[in-house]
Image: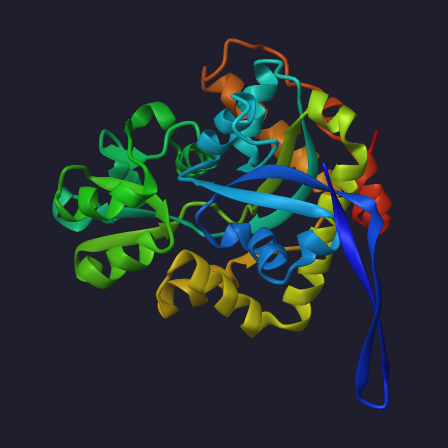
Length: 327
């Protein structure tokens, strides 16, 4: 670890005097963070842009991946120490009894859409039966599609799923290779822009928000509890910056991920960034785990005790009122 250098400055009548150079007692900790390239990573992008990680004694390298499945895999492979994921990839790993924990929720999102091609006979959700639908497999989008079908007297087995990553969704749909796709911004906006008159679109989440969870391996958390606190303190400060400087924060994130104005405005309105660990997360994960069992997407028959997969000490130290779930 490196020692942070502190300069003591005093300003008198417009003049600044440097009293000396000293070694801070707080060491600088380096870590890598896996994010998806989307506004969902806004708190981390803001913390880096505004120097909040450095102010809290951290040197954070942000590595970007296309989905939460990929970020979770990077975490387990030791490519990163901390990762962002939607809750379903985490649930999959909990079923596999991986030694990982959620240290906070950083994002709540409602930004995923199902597009169907009209000239493929899709006008209503019931028309999806027997169709080929592109979706990033094993992500939260698969659950949302399955739940939407169930709410319309079908299930996930009534469609043929094709693994299509979000960046591929536009070309896949506009080329007519599939009957529909599930995707999010900026790809949803690009589909609307290119073939709005040729598609029908539904919000695939059925009013259920998704959770962007921050996860880490248990061995790393146990060895670095103070680093967890520093990291979450940086995100709490980023949350405050977003709350008080929404347009500036949006512009910082937009420049980082290169979204156009329309996609950024849409995505920004569909995401919230309060740090939390509450019962609604546990309830949502239990619901999704039951769906995975009933859909034969896991060989497990019991829902994991997700309380065992929550590390609350870090957020309790930073934002105690945000921790509210039943033990």
